Each structure stands twice: as structure tokens, then as C-alpha cells.
Image (tube, rainbow, N blue to C red; front, side):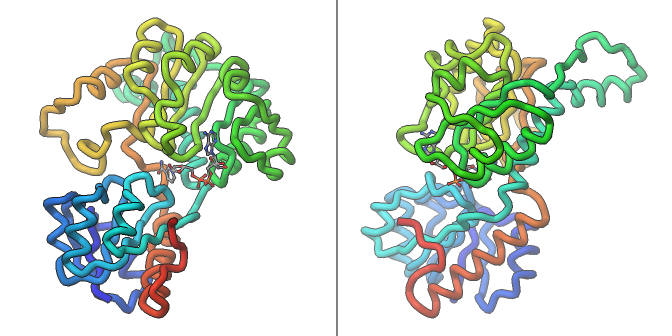
Length: 327
Ligand code: NAD
């Protein structure tokens, strides 16, 4: 099949090539939207990443150009209008699991760095400043960690935090036996927020979870607690979070995702003026640590994403359905 790979980066080429696909890839650096969709004209499939926008106009244009499959290089599919895909006659396949540990370990890396101010200490030591003022952290051992969404990533995260000697609270419409076995206690959301020193988000972005962490939720949190989001930006109401940081109610914030990230992340904008004032405000807080959606970015995860993407393409070519369909 001919496959237009949108949002291609050098690492996407490398891992898709290494997956040994029998398909012909058209590398498209642009993100998918209604204007760039025509770059897939004549292709059987379009391969998308998290900030490609597969809305109704883009899907109609892809369908008109001959695309019959969207092969997502992600687990999340909140960026795809599934009804519009069905209407355009386009099947959707995703990578349901690649390396939950990759994202869970990144969440833990953010917690450790933010708590012990590693990012600030690194810069200080390079300047010959060995003062410890401002670097005071807290022991993770004995702290309570709230896990919102106890699926694959939430479970991997809970397992690591249990290893630190943390007490675990969880909130999820479905209880997971693997988490119960770790000693995690399922509680209502308000109880989790009120009882946790660290709250980590691992639920998908759905209509029900959009702005799950809003003013009311932040008001429930323990004063000075840490909030970690490696899931999807819009699960947090960023303006409400900024308010809680300004008032001192929220003690620490670690983000790997951001509501408006498609205008920023995955590009080198270091010589550009960033016109997103909300994001710029976040960057001014000393107790905020942000990475640019790199939770998934390990060699193991990239290999698994490429292999499953190729499996979706192979199965679609043989049967007309991807191996891991969405919807
Ligand atoms: P998963 O489907 O295994 O688990 C998600 C869990 O969230 C499920 O147990 C589900 O029941 C639960 N959930 C659904 N609605 C909820 C709600 N209202 N409140 C609490 N829990 C709820 O998914 P996963 O593989 O663990 O991935 C979780 C999310 O992580 C993905 O949806 C994606 O948004 C994000 N993610 C981020 C990166 C990254 O690089 N930062 C990479 C992969 C995935």
C-alpha cells in the first residue's frame, strides 16, 4: 500500500523503515489538517500522530483522495472524528499498547526532578553555585499518591510508586485487579484529590475527562500538593491551574502535555516568539516543570509503535480491517 506518513520526523522514518514494511511510505513533514490532507492524494492509508487533526473536513479530503485507512501511531484517538471517518469510508487503526513503562517512567522522572529541583540544581552547579536554598524536597516514602486512570500506564506508574513506599489511591470507573494487588485503594475523585500528596493523570481525554481538573477539583486538593499530567493536555483546565499556582494552593506542577500543544510541541521554536501567553505564564513558575510530550519517546516504545503500525497496515491490506481497529 501507499502510505502518507504525516508529521514525519527523522525518528519516525528510522523506526518505520526498521520495521521492515512492505509498504511504500510518503514522508510528509506537515501536520494533517483540511489543507494538508491533499498531500495524501493517491495513497491508500494516512499514518497520523497525536497532533494531526483528523476532523471532518480533513477526513472528507483524505477520503476524496483515496485514503481508506488511518493508521494512528498512538494509543489515544481523541484527535480523530470517528463519525466523520466512518462517513468518509475510512477505517481507523491504532497502537493500543506499546510501552506503558515508557510513559510511567517519564511521569516518575518528572516527579523526582520537580521534587528535588534537579533542573534548577543542574543549572546552578554549572554556574558554580552550590547553595542549597530553594532546593528543599520531600521524601516520597510514606507519601500518598493518587492515580487517576488505572489502565496500562496508570498500573505501571502505581507499581513504581509502590516501590518507593508510597500509599496508593486510585480513581477509575473500572477497578483493575493488578492495582488492587499493589494495595491501591479505589476512592471517589474528591477523596483522591483531598488525600493525595501527588496526583498523576493517566486517563484518556474524553468528553467526560475534559477539564476534569478544574477550579473545583483544585480546591479539593491538599494545599501544596503536586499535580502531574502525562496524559492529554485538556484534562487540565490550564487557566484554573495557573490560578492555583499563583495562590500557592498548588505546590508543584509537572506537565508532558498541554492543551494547545499542537501549536508548539515537536518543533524547534527556540528562535521564535511564543505567542501563547498561557504557556508563557506557565514557564515563569519556579515550581513548574514541562517537557514537550516525550513520555512515549524510548527506543522500545518507538520500535513497538512502528511494528504495530506495520501490522495494522498489513492486516488492512489483507482483510480490509486494521489489526487494532478503533470504533
Ligand atoms: P488505558 O486505556 O489502558 O487506561 C486508561 C484508563 O483510564 C482505563 O482504565 C479507563 O477505565 C480509565 N478512565 C476512563 N475514564 C476515566 C475517568 N473519567 N476517570 C478516571 N479514569 C478513567 O490507556 P493507557 O495506555 O494507560 O493510556 C492512558 C493515556 O495516556 C492515553 O489515553 C493517552 O492520552 C496518554 N498517553 C500519553 C503518552 C505520552 O507520551 N505522554 C503516551 C501514551 C499515552
